[in-house]
Image (cartoon, rainbow, N blue to C red; front, side, top):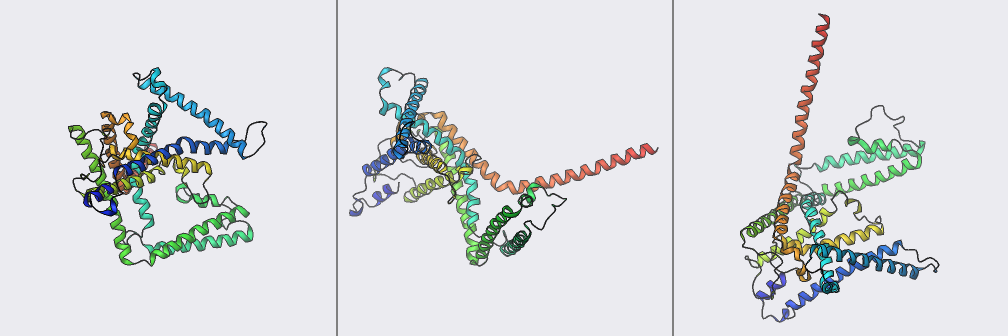
Length: 434
């Protein structure tokens, strides 16, 4: 997209003569090729190599494990191809004949990747709207909030007191092997209030000291972070945070509005389905009605979708457990993360074309995907994306108000419930006395 605008504005420049459509398409096809090789060959081989031990009766070593992994990978590929034959025969009965049976490279492999890309687009439909709301919390955790939203000085003194309290507990535990709250208190706070402290009371000796040291390090890191935030520049504290929040809100609103516009154009018939990939030559016409500004906006929105989908991916209920951690990520989780990111990155061009973010053919080899020509699927996808993104944003910005309103109504209800039983008890006692 950026290359098209550069060639459009500088068609005779010597420095951009090397930039043409064949170069861009060739590079994208190479990216497409190696992403498929990594997804279908390298990552399964890495997992099977970890699980392999070598064939029975062979000398134990690396090559024995490689041979076993290659054998199992070959069987796995045959099984996947067999399932692909069966599924394609059930879906496309017209091409279920002996002629297409041997068209492995021209028919079945694109069909297999079409199924994988469809799963990737569905995964993007789940994690991208969730990432819209989650990204506000992620960005706010790295920025200093204004004084009217967060009292940094008070938080710093609270963190200092908590750290000193934990250090006194550690000294007590070093001397006696127990914390100073022994025996355990008769009053047990609710789990949501002080669950960590209640679990800490059950530990003794080395386990107690190790847990206290970990909590002290965590509180010390938090105190140092708050101390740095206290000494930040006033302009950075009061301007950067609101500006970043407004930028995120504007990008999200523009994305949702573009999706709504694309849905209306599909319903009216102004816009064609994304399967129609005509040959486009760089440097002839602008891709956006707004010119370079619109092209730059398209690039920013595509990058924004990539970031939000990644953030939303690790916010899903089942996938947050495989979030990579520094020096604490098993190799199995690394393989799973690589596979998920490959699927998402491969489906991102499909998402951009389906939602109408750009008119440029980012598909490359994806142009063979037939479900992009299904009007019902494309329309339903756009409607679902717009509604889910709107609901996620509404839930993000209204959750505090709804929670406070629910607490107020609950207090009022409990107040009335406490009054009514007393009145009924008094009436019953008066009736007994009579």
